Length: 134
Image 1: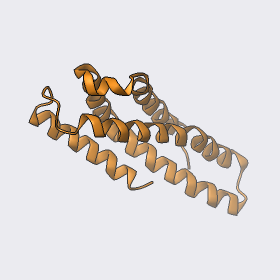
Image 2 (image 1 turned 60 degrees about the horizontal axis):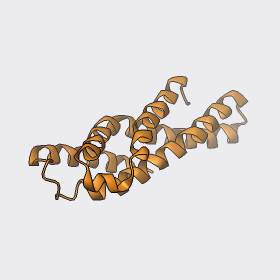
Image 3 (image 1 turned 60 degrees about the vertical axis):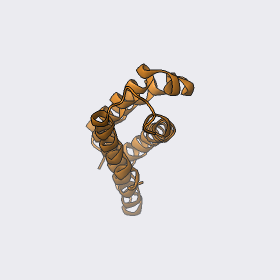
Protein backbone atom coordinates (compact mmCIF):
# COMPACT_ATOMS: atom_id res chain seq x y z
CA UNK A 1 0.00 0.00 0.00
CA UNK A 2 1.12 3.52 -0.69
CA UNK A 3 2.29 5.12 2.51
CA UNK A 4 1.68 8.86 3.02
CA UNK A 5 5.46 9.34 3.41
CA UNK A 6 5.91 7.98 -0.12
CA UNK A 7 4.71 11.30 -1.47
CA UNK A 8 7.90 12.85 -0.08
CA UNK A 9 9.83 10.95 -2.75
CA UNK A 10 7.78 12.75 -5.39
CA UNK A 11 8.58 16.10 -3.78
CA UNK A 12 12.30 15.24 -3.59
CA UNK A 13 12.43 14.24 -7.26
CA UNK A 14 10.47 17.36 -8.20
CA UNK A 15 13.03 19.50 -6.34
CA UNK A 16 15.84 17.82 -8.30
CA UNK A 17 14.14 17.84 -11.70
CA UNK A 18 12.76 21.37 -11.79
CA UNK A 19 16.14 23.17 -11.64
CA UNK A 20 17.48 20.97 -14.45
CA UNK A 21 14.49 21.87 -16.60
CA UNK A 22 15.20 25.57 -16.07
CA UNK A 23 18.69 25.37 -17.58
CA UNK A 24 18.70 25.72 -21.38
CA UNK A 25 20.11 22.60 -23.02
CA UNK A 26 22.89 24.55 -24.73
CA UNK A 27 24.24 25.61 -21.32
CA UNK A 28 25.19 22.01 -20.58
CA UNK A 29 27.52 22.17 -23.59
CA UNK A 30 29.01 25.56 -22.75
CA UNK A 31 28.83 26.06 -19.00
CA UNK A 32 30.84 24.22 -16.36
CA UNK A 33 28.31 25.43 -13.77
CA UNK A 34 25.43 23.80 -15.65
CA UNK A 35 27.38 20.56 -15.95
CA UNK A 36 28.18 20.70 -12.22
CA UNK A 37 24.47 21.17 -11.51
CA UNK A 38 23.72 17.99 -13.46
CA UNK A 39 26.45 16.03 -11.67
CA UNK A 40 25.05 17.16 -8.32
CA UNK A 41 21.51 16.34 -9.43
CA UNK A 42 22.28 12.75 -10.37
CA UNK A 43 24.17 12.31 -7.10
CA UNK A 44 21.13 13.52 -5.17
CA UNK A 45 18.64 11.65 -7.36
CA UNK A 46 20.02 8.14 -7.46
CA UNK A 47 18.40 6.86 -4.25
CA UNK A 48 15.08 8.77 -4.38
CA UNK A 49 14.67 7.96 -8.08
CA UNK A 50 15.07 4.24 -7.41
CA UNK A 51 12.55 4.61 -4.59
CA UNK A 52 10.12 6.47 -6.82
CA UNK A 53 10.30 3.80 -9.51
CA UNK A 54 9.78 1.05 -6.93
CA UNK A 55 6.84 2.88 -5.32
CA UNK A 56 5.22 3.43 -8.73
CA UNK A 57 5.55 -0.27 -9.49
CA UNK A 58 4.01 -1.15 -6.11
CA UNK A 59 1.18 1.35 -6.62
CA UNK A 60 0.38 -0.19 -10.03
CA UNK A 61 0.30 -3.67 -8.50
CA UNK A 62 -1.72 -2.52 -5.50
CA UNK A 63 -4.23 -0.71 -7.67
CA UNK A 64 -4.89 -3.90 -9.64
CA UNK A 65 -5.27 -5.97 -6.47
CA UNK A 66 -7.43 -3.39 -4.70
CA UNK A 67 -9.73 -3.11 -7.70
CA UNK A 68 -10.01 -6.89 -8.05
CA UNK A 69 -10.78 -7.32 -4.35
CA UNK A 70 -13.20 -4.39 -4.18
CA UNK A 71 -11.35 -3.09 -1.12
CA UNK A 72 -11.93 0.26 0.53
CA UNK A 73 -11.82 3.28 -1.80
CA UNK A 74 -9.29 4.96 0.50
CA UNK A 75 -6.55 2.55 -0.60
CA UNK A 76 -7.48 2.80 -4.25
CA UNK A 77 -7.49 6.59 -4.05
CA UNK A 78 -4.05 6.66 -2.40
CA UNK A 79 -2.55 4.44 -5.10
CA UNK A 80 -4.26 6.44 -7.87
CA UNK A 81 -3.06 9.74 -6.42
CA UNK A 82 0.49 8.46 -6.11
CA UNK A 83 0.47 7.36 -9.74
CA UNK A 84 -1.17 10.61 -10.85
CA UNK A 85 1.59 12.71 -9.28
CA UNK A 86 4.53 10.29 -9.39
CA UNK A 87 4.52 9.10 -12.99
CA UNK A 88 4.83 12.59 -14.55
CA UNK A 89 7.69 13.51 -12.20
CA UNK A 90 9.44 10.24 -13.03
CA UNK A 91 8.99 10.82 -16.75
CA UNK A 92 10.21 14.42 -16.57
CA UNK A 93 13.35 13.34 -14.70
CA UNK A 94 13.98 10.53 -17.20
CA UNK A 95 13.70 12.97 -20.12
CA UNK A 96 16.15 15.38 -18.49
CA UNK A 97 18.50 12.60 -17.44
CA UNK A 98 18.82 10.98 -20.86
CA UNK A 99 19.20 14.24 -22.75
CA UNK A 100 21.67 15.89 -20.41
CA UNK A 101 23.64 12.70 -19.68
CA UNK A 102 24.53 12.40 -23.36
CA UNK A 103 26.04 15.89 -23.25
CA UNK A 104 27.72 15.97 -19.85
CA UNK A 105 29.09 12.44 -19.59
CA UNK A 106 30.53 12.30 -23.10
CA UNK A 107 34.08 12.73 -21.77
CA UNK A 108 34.85 16.00 -23.56
CA UNK A 109 34.63 18.45 -20.66
CA UNK A 110 38.00 19.27 -19.12
CA UNK A 111 36.71 20.34 -15.71
CA UNK A 112 35.29 16.86 -15.07
CA UNK A 113 38.35 14.87 -14.04
CA UNK A 114 38.54 11.09 -14.19
CA UNK A 115 37.50 10.71 -10.53
CA UNK A 116 34.43 12.93 -10.88
CA UNK A 117 33.56 11.21 -14.16
CA UNK A 118 33.80 7.81 -12.47
CA UNK A 119 31.50 8.94 -9.66
CA UNK A 120 29.05 10.45 -12.13
CA UNK A 121 28.98 7.28 -14.19
CA UNK A 122 28.32 5.27 -11.01
CA UNK A 123 25.38 7.55 -10.13
CA UNK A 124 24.10 7.31 -13.70
CA UNK A 125 24.41 3.51 -13.63
CA UNK A 126 22.31 3.36 -10.47
CA UNK A 127 19.65 5.49 -12.15
CA UNK A 128 19.82 3.27 -15.24
CA UNK A 129 19.23 0.21 -13.03
CA UNK A 130 16.08 1.85 -11.72
CA UNK A 131 15.03 2.70 -15.27
CA UNK A 132 15.26 -0.99 -16.14
CA UNK A 133 12.50 -1.62 -13.58
CA UNK A 134 10.02 0.59 -15.46
